[in-house]
Each structure stands twice: as structure tokens, then as C-alpha cells.
Length: 293
Image 1 (cartoon, one colour):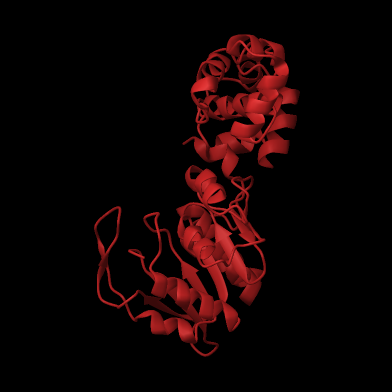
Image 2 (image 1 turned 90 degrees about the vertical axis):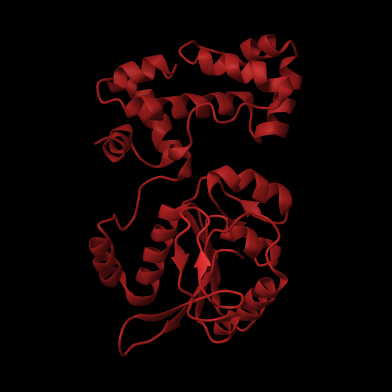
């Protein structure tokens, strides 16, 4: 991996954990985004006695065989294995996610599910605890997972103290879905015109028949195509797009909740709140507070 793995060992005398950053062969490693170099403490040998191994995000592609072997050996001897963002691909390549639920950044979730069909990918979760194996979404979700691990290992008081020190909430409401921009799913060539029309007319009371008419197909064919492409019915997809549009509008504090409900075709503020809570496990007002200055 281009990005290093970090290993964590228990230490009750000095700090809750002693942390070691390791890579394939040690040495300084530049990060893929900023170019800043990381000082590496050790080689993969550090995984032989680590209690927890955290794999950070890395450039997608085949992970080094030696790294996968080290992860597998660490897992087999009982080490806890966790990943941040695309680090989940390394865990999947090592077979550690087979038969398990897992998550990664929503941009990469479809690829993870496609490349590793034995993994049940949840693109909405911020992090998932499957016991010995944990996965998390993007960078901030990695912090969420790490605070969760602090709480699990050393109690909530310690986790709260760490969260205060980092000036971050101990637990963020909702999942990844609230961060996905409206109109992200455009579909393939057969659906492009349908999804584009729908996203441009969310204020209308659109029916499945209306969508089928735009695609010049039967409603049965439309249902099958949406299931194959998006894994959901046309109506469920439409509700998802309305909610994503609502998220975008909520970032403008001048627009009232009632007006957002009208513009997105959700009708009333009450209906918007109900759908919002079911989809994101939070409220429109809480979302607005989190995403506006």
C-alpha cells in the first residue's frame, strides 16, 4: 500500500495505547493527496504483536501481497482489524470481509460491492462494527470509528475527553447518505434521460408511469431497469433524489423548511421531516445546523 498501516498496542502504564506506524519496508512515505511525507516507525513486522491494526485509505488497486498476508496472519491470531475509507478494499482482498457487512466512502461503495460480491456493502453507514473487523467511510468517519473504539476499550468518559480535545462530536447523527450530492446517480445510457428529467422536475408529483413515459418503456421494464442499476424501485429512487435535493436546499438558510418541502415535491414540512428522519436518522433542522456557518 502506498499509504501506511497503523498498529496499536495496549499500554496501561503511560497511555491507553502505544501507536506504531508501519509500512511494507519502513522509511518515509509521501501521502497521495498533499505530498507531505510520513515518518514510518516500523515495517510490517509490527503487525506480529499488534492488538489493533488500522488500514488507512490508499489508491485503489491490488494491495501488495505481503501486506495482505500480514493482515491475514494478524487476524488469525486474534488482532482486531479496522479500515478507513478505501482501506476496506485491502480488507476485502484479504478475504476478511467475506460474509460480513462493511462500508467505505460512498464514492467507492459501488466498486467495493462489484469487486467483492461476498461482502454486504452498506453505503450509508459511517462505520460498521462486525466484532473483530470494523470498517469506516471517509476521513471524518474514520475519526468517528476511532472514538468509538476508544469508548469500547476504555469507556465513554475517555472517549468524550478525546472528542473534546479534538473539538468534534462524539457521535454524528445520520449516515453517509446525507453527504451525497443531489443528482449523483445519473444512470446508464438507457436511464440518463429519465433520471435527468426527474431531477429537473422534482417539484412535480412524479409517478412511476411518468418516468416510464420519459424512458419510452413499460412500468415493468422501468422497475427491472432501476432494480438492476440502483438496487431499488423507481419510487424509492425518486424519494432518495428528493431528499438529496432537500439537503442541498437546507444549506441555504434563507429558504424555509416549508418551501424546501414544496420545491422537492415532498409536499409538507411534516412529510419532509418524516422522510428525512427515516433516511438519515436526523432532522432537517439538525442537518442545517451541521452544514451552515
